[in-house]
Image 1: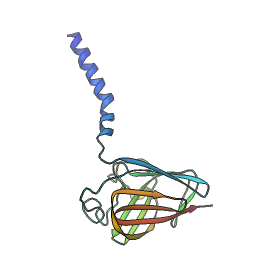
Image 2 (image 1 turned 45 degrees about the vertical axis):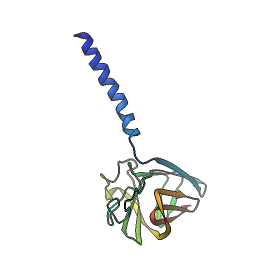
Image 3 (image 1 turned 90 degrees about the vertical axis):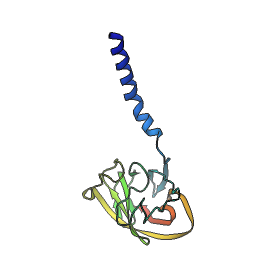
Image 4 (image 1 turned 30 degrees about the horizontal axis):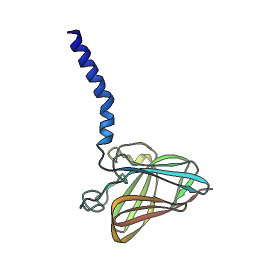
Length: 174
């Protein structure tokens, strides 16, 4: 009887240790980290990169209009800045934040900076925790982008996916 208890306990312990690792491996969307220096400060964005796979992204079932989107796949997109930053019209103090987007139609998107830095998707998104919101410039692309991409430069943040590019200006808040 003692050997059975040890085997059961060992098996249970092994499952507890390996289950989180298996969950990470099952991700369909790869994750990426992009960084840039903006006005002397480092800005980093960590996000999941979903594929279209023949689906309609924004304005469809994946990202319906008038719904807050996690701006990627899996966890909410994470923005970290080590210096105060201006994102469009929004002053963002040094720190870590979640990024969400609110596409209201094909031409109007809003970038949301939320003070709850680490959260899963937009399931527990709470507008009361928003640092603020800023409009994005939206343009139609001439050719489709299969995989969601965030481009970060010393002066802009750009989201591209499907036939859409949404961007916002970045600069130091000094």
